[in-house]
Image 1 (cartoon, rainbow, N blue to C red):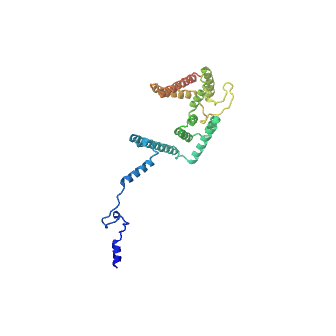
Image 2: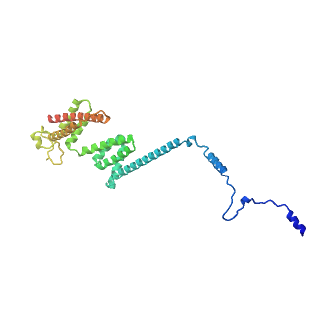
Image 3: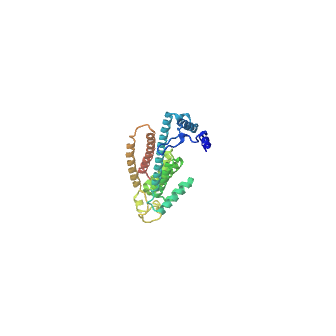
Amino acid sequence: MEAKVFSLACAPSLPSLISPANVRISIFKTKYPPTPRCSFLRRCTSEKEAILEGMPKEYYDDEWQAQQREKTKELNQRRHKEDEEEERKVEEYREIGLRLKDYPEEDLRKARKLVSSLIRAVDEVEEKIVEAAEKGELTELVLMVIWNRLDLARHDDEKDAIRCLDLLYRRVETEIVKREASPAMRLLNDLLNMHDGFDNEAWLKECRKQMVASFPREDPFSILVPAGFDIDKHQGPVRPLTEADDILLRVDFVREVDALLQDVRSEQSEAQNALGLDPETIAHKLKQQEKQRTIRLVEALLDLAIDLKW
């Protein structure tokens, strides 16, 4: 018994398997191993450098960063302006589409169909316009449809469409005004269209023939007999004049043409006060010169009508 006790007392002590630094002393006081902070930061820094390895050197330049932020700001402003411009165009398109909402749907459909046929007519558009005018199909609604298409072409900056639609609008408007004009103005328009721009003497001779055929003879006997009766031979149809007869007297032609010239001259005197050499002023002056040439032709027709003899 004593020997066993001795052997145990003298036995060498075994090394501890748990380090004292790793042992928790209590619930409130705990010992942890020292944290290798320097090695952790070094490891994170090396990982960050590995992630940003492909970035350009300007990326680390503060001035370059400020320039990029300024460019981004300008890009956002430009995008905002483009969005506003797009919204404005959409609103204008909507406004154009709503112009014709008060017109009857059936009339609007016919007007659009007529305008489409005039656009497709190309070389035969003149005959199509005259034919539509004779049928009474040229109305204010047709002009509105053409004007809407012209506005859309202007918004889309389609130059060829703008030119074609503008010419079509002017031609249709001229035909409508011609149909609604008085007999004197219609005759004046026909006489002006006979001018070729060169030979005034030949033009005046043709105008005199047209006036003689248009105006009734002004003598006591011709006032009492209807048109078509041959005064010299005393032959021809004899029927009373009715209010439906569209007869143009020379005195009415002279009176209306003279009133037209007075109105145009007053407008011309006001327009001649424009000064300047900018493109708009020069274009305006050229238009005024063209009007002056037309006024001189109308004055020649007025003198011819006043001195007309059968």
